[in-house]
Image: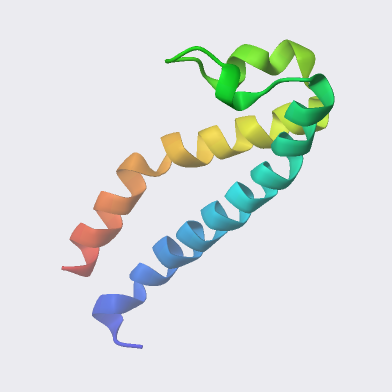
Length: 86
């Protein structure tokens, strides 16, 4: 790998990890919604999945929180990596 593009590897790994956590989120949250009797189609417009957290088990909530943090924190990381690669 060239030195200029080697810096992109951590960004690729983080993107891949984000996708894995998203799939994990689906695997935990969708069954939890069903078990809690929450029908996503019946939620009012603008409702967020966090609105039903009180009815969810902790295991379904913590993966949701982890995914949220994965989407918030790298907003600076990705642009910095791209600038360093240029």
